[in-house]
Image 1 (cartoon, rainbow, N blue to C red):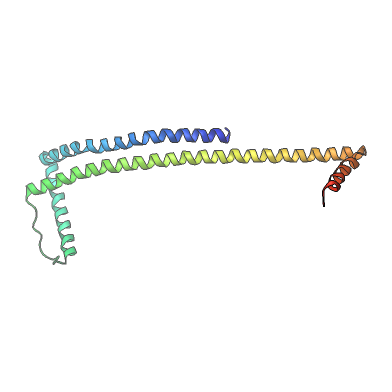
Image 2 (image 1 turned 45 degrees about the horizontal axis):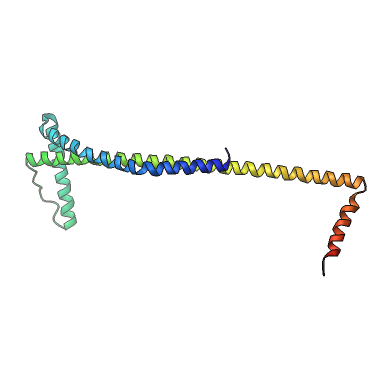
Length: 184
């Protein structure tokens, strides 16, 4: 593949990516938007599922204790006081909210990871095209160097043949005539 066709191919791919990028961003936004109702459904189901309810209550209470201790340290209040637990409904609501937000965050994180990987693959393709173009240029340079060497050898052969036939004086005389014809 010649360097010209590689560059043309790269430009065409870039135009395609420019058209796909807005659609991809819109798709990412749509995924985030559709994940919110799913998160709300998770919140409702988490509050009504019997086995899961106790787990989320314990999770919410641990989160409440942790966040209260952090807040007390930040504001310089005493940290050795007992922290009252949340009532059951507040704990369920807090844990359900946390579960819903974790779901939305997970979807957003997955979309971000997907976008980074896609961008990385795109950059890898660009780098491969650049490498191929550089390789083609190197091959062309090597071919040109071989041609120059071949032409140099042919000139030496012709000089040798001309010298053998006594024609070297013509070339030297021609050069001397041209040099003497130059104005001083």
